[in-house]
Image (cartoon, rainbow, N blue to C red; front, side):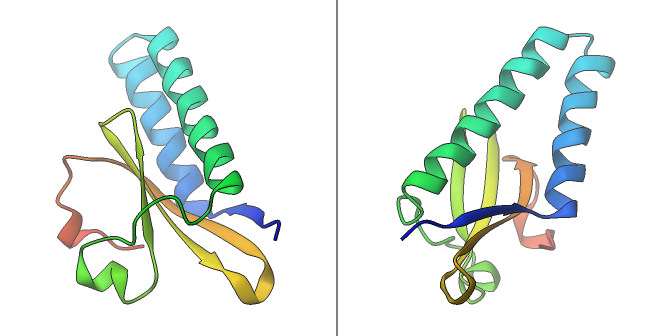
Length: 105
């Protein structure tokens, strides 16, 4: 079954914030572009193998069916599979060392 990828507005905001932080605040455009490319590669991998990432271990996310994709060890992508509508919803893209228990999706 082929799923359509849907990137939430919040995930797009996350991606923009990550890119801007690395490119502007850290003055490293090349690293920002490389990370952005890795994020989209992870999305491509999830589209091919949607069940390849584990269900999130934090209970509040697990109850909602969120899975955790890891991007270069330092970033996490939360997504869920909406089988009824043949979609994969990318909910958040965040720095892995954030306090995930306080995170909203």
